[in-house]
Length: 278
Image 1 (tube, rainbow, N blue to C red):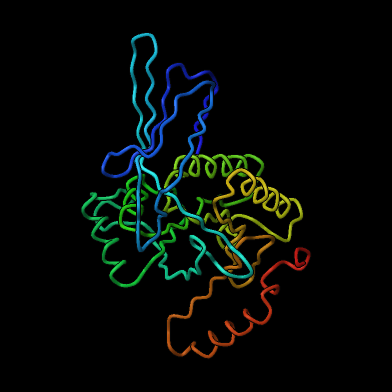
Image 2: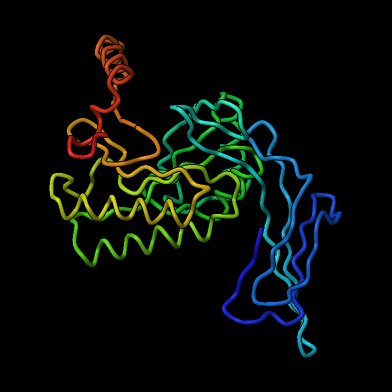
C-alpha cells in the first residue's frame, strides 16, 4: 500500500497495526510517497471482518501530527460470470437500503441504533447492503466494516442530463470513492440507477456514461462498477455486473419472475443496448 502527497513529507512514518496494536509494517518517507510493504495480513470478509489501523505520523520543526484510519484487505472481482471474494465464489444476499430513519430521516440516530440494525440483517443471512442514491454517513461504512457487510453504493442522480450536472455528478462520485476507498466493505459502485436523469438512446449521453465507467475503472481497479443498474425499458452499455431490477414481490407474478430469470440466464446480452452488445 502507498501514501502520496503533493509535496515532500518531512519526517513522516507510515505504520500498519493489528487490532492489538502490534506493528505489522512500518516505513519512513524519503520522498512525497511512502510504499509500505505488507504481508501476513488476514483478508476481510463478511464471515471474518478482519481490520487493521493505518497510522501516519509526521514530525517536522518541532510540530507533531498523527492521522489514523481503520482499513482491511480484500480481493473482490468478477471472473467468468462469477463473483469472487478473496478467490472464492461469492453470492450476494442483499437488501436495498434507502437509509431513512423514523425520527431523524437522513441522519443516523446513533452508532447503537445502526449497529443493531446491521446485526439483525447479519442474523437473517444478509451479506450485502445496496445503499441507495446518496453518499452514506461515514458511520455507515465504519459499522459495515466492523460487523461484516459489503456495501454496494448508488450515486446520487440528476433529474435531467446536462454538461454541468454530469460534471457535478462525476465530482460527487469521485469524492465519495476517495473518502471511502480504505473501507474493505466498499465493493460495488453504480453510476446511474434505472436510467434516472439520462437517455441512453442519446449518443452523447450514452457516450458520457461509457467514458465515465472506463475512467473510474482505471482509477479505482479494486471496485466493481455498474454503468446503469437497468430495469424494464432501459439497459446496460458496458458494466462489470449485468444487474437488472424486476419487482415481483407478490406470488401471482411468480411465473413471470421464473420466465425472466430463464431468459436472463440464456441471453444476458439482451439486457445491453444493441449498439453495445459484443
